[in-house]
Image (cartoon, rainbow, N blue to C red; front, side):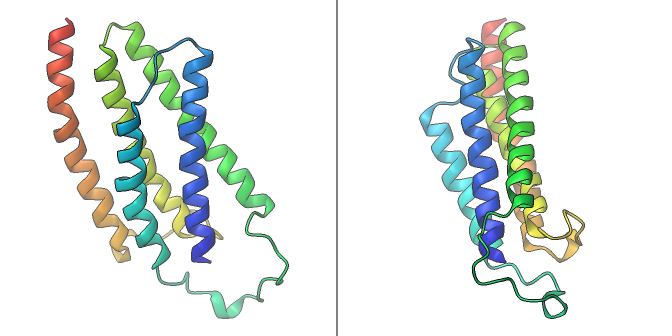
Length: 173
């Protein structure tokens, strides 16, 4: 079950990043993230979350369910639908915000940093969606060691990126 969770997390966030770039390209916007930002997003944020997700305890109802058929694919219909919907939503919000920031006169650097911050936030929300695949994101946050990672990321990222954003915003106006 944890393999499916990790695959779902990787596919949904990776597809969102691809759709973000395609959407920006189709709308004639600048590149939304630099390679180093994308690398940081995938290695640091996704890497830590995927390892933690892989070692999550079971959902608690494993013994009451029938075993999966041996020939059943990792990619079943509900998983494909959830990957499509979540990645499309993340990409749509990011492309819309990026275009709006550029249109409002924000520097490309400030807009990129805000999109990076938004993607980190989306990935922290997505980890909750991935934790319990069968029942959605209904889970007890207090019992999750992933919650600590999400809280630290949400608290620290605005402070780290905010300094650069404030400098770029002041410099551009």
